[in-house]
Length: 211
Image (cartoon, rainbow, N blue to C red; front, top):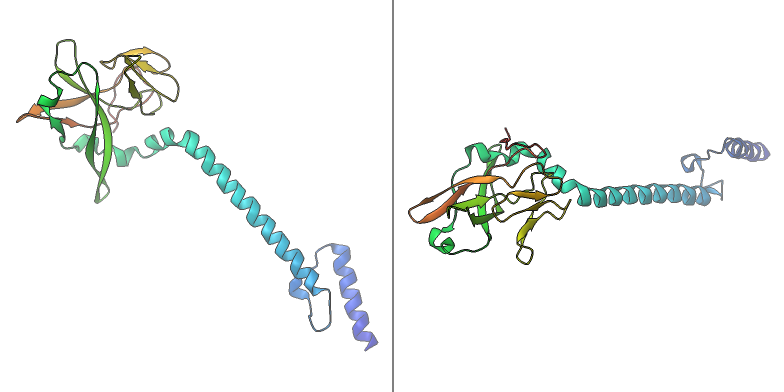
C-alpha cells in the first residue's frame, strides 16, 4: 500500500511542478483533490466562453455602426438585378401633378438572387424638374451608400452619415458626395408612374451603373 501511495504522490508532485494537472488523469477512487481539477477546468472553459461572447458582441456592435453602407456594396451582385430590372409601379401619375416638394414613395422591388426572386421594399423620391417634368431620385447617397432623407424646413436632402446635402432636384449642394443624387429611369404609362430602380457606383464623380 505504501508503494501505491508513493506513486500517487510522485505523480501529483510532477504535475504540480509542470503546472499542467489535468482532470482526465485524476483517479476519483484514490485522489480527493480531483474535484479541484474539475473546478479549475470548468473555470477555464467559462472564461473562454465569456471572452468569445464578448468578442462576438463587440464585432456585432461595430458592424451595426459602420457595416451597413459597406455591406450594401459587398452584396452588389444580389442587389444589381437592376440591369434586368423590370419596371416597378410607383403610383398614379395624377398624384404628383401639383407637388411642391419631393415626395417619398415606397416601391416593391423584385430582384433576382441566383435562382430566387427576392421582393423587398425600397424608398424613392418623386420630384419635378425646373421644366415641370416628373423625376424619380434614388435615396442612396453617392458618397458611401447611406440613405438620405428630405427635410422640409431646410428644403433639402441631407445624408445622416457624413452630412452630404442635395437640393430638391437632387443636385449636390455640399459635403463629401462627389455628385448629386442619381436620377432613375422613369416613365408614365397608362396614367401610372413607374421606375427602373438601379444601383450606381459610390464615390465617383460621374454616374456609373454597377455591373
